[in-house]
Image (cartoon, rainbow, N blue to C red; front, side):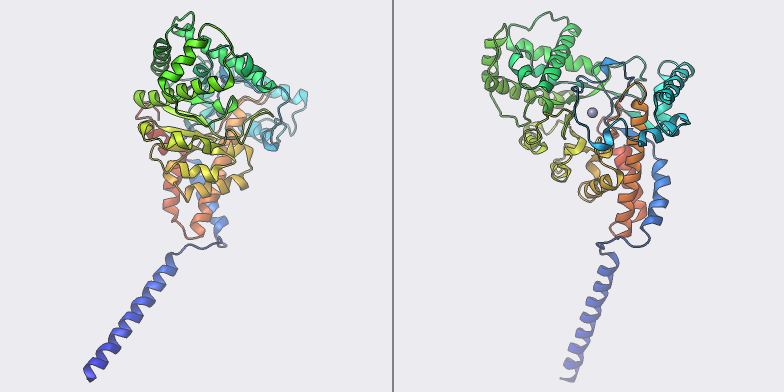
Amino acid sequence: MKTTIWGSFLRKILLLTGALSSLVSIAASQARPLPGPDVAQIYERLLPQIEKIPAFDHHAHPGFSDDPDVDAMAAPPDASSALRTRDDNPELIAAAKALFKYPYADLSPEHAQWLVAKKVELKKQYPGTAYFDMILDKINTESSVANRAMMAGYLDPNRFPWVFFADSFMWPFNNELETARNPDEGVYIPLQEKMLHRWMQQENVSKLPAKFGDYLDFIARVLSDDQKNGGIAMKFEVAYFRPTTFSDPTREQAEEIYNRFVSGGVPPEKDYRIFQDFIFRYLVMLGGRLDLAVHIHTAVGIGDYFNLSQSNVMGLESVLRDPRYHSTTFVLIHGGYPLEREAVWLAAMKNVYLDSSFGELAQYPSAFKETLKMWLETFPDKITFGTDCFPYNEVLGAEESYWLGAQSSRMALAAALAEMVSENEITESRALQLAHAYLHDTAVGLYHGKVH
Ligand SMILES: [Zn+2]
């Protein structure tokens, strides 16, 4: 009896200590909802280490402002720009100071001339591909995607892998209706026609093939030749031109529409969309077959007529989660911004990745930090860095926007990780692993040795 009482007392003591010690260990590792007073110190420790990580820029438009091949499309005149992306953003002066030792605090026309002259002098000093290589060295970017209509001789292909545009295959017919929809389409659609024409020239095709099967073969030939010319991915900016929800028509449906309009006539919008839905899915399938990643613009866009609700990133969900495309690697360029909170859950698919470019320019680092933190806390192995750099004008070029994008991203990354460390979510060494993954390793891993 006594032994039993003693035994049950002992058991109770043991259970209690067990419970207590597990409570203690939970408390030691449980995340806190607020950063501690150490967060600024952690940030100061992480930032210099993050600045030393050579980056891979997953989305950028390098080139000079007078180069028409920087993009397959152009900004419509008088388009509204969000505050930080205007070319009078004083941070661009900070960029010119950091890159070129610009000696002035404003961009008055005479002062701006200094910057133009400085760049001319540097181009002589760093001829050919050396100039943009030097810019990448200054911002510690090992290599950067060149998402351009065509590659430029002045970009080093070893450091600027090409991402070409694939939208134009969806607009082969008479585009009268498409062009007339609004003034922005009046700028965009003729440029798509021009792009398709250039692919036809490349393949020595003088007019659209009479047979639909031959048109599909022509598309496949362009992709495979672009790949031979250094292309690592195809890019869609389809959200600028039409809604990004895609139905699933049969080949026969698409063929019937092709046969009806290949030699003329204006396709009604409904028919054109069905044809395009088929071509988009065909391109996505080819991406998997040829090992060409599929980059898709998923965010707000320039131009006042850009339809945010119709080009919502979630419209792509039925394509992204379609098991027929499991061998296609998708990169959601701009991470669905401003719907990046929803978009990160699309990266649950093993073949879907996010790129953070534009988010770091459209937002200030304090806001962009929140985006990165939320992504790092959800699928940290599926997110990649990009700047979306672009030559603003003759004075402020891709150089300054590269600098601003890279600096903003590194600062926001250090701040997001510092909060996560201080809030007891991760250790500092884990924070640096995540920084390497985001800035370089995850994106480079998608291209099987073709980029570094
Ligand atoms: Zn872009």
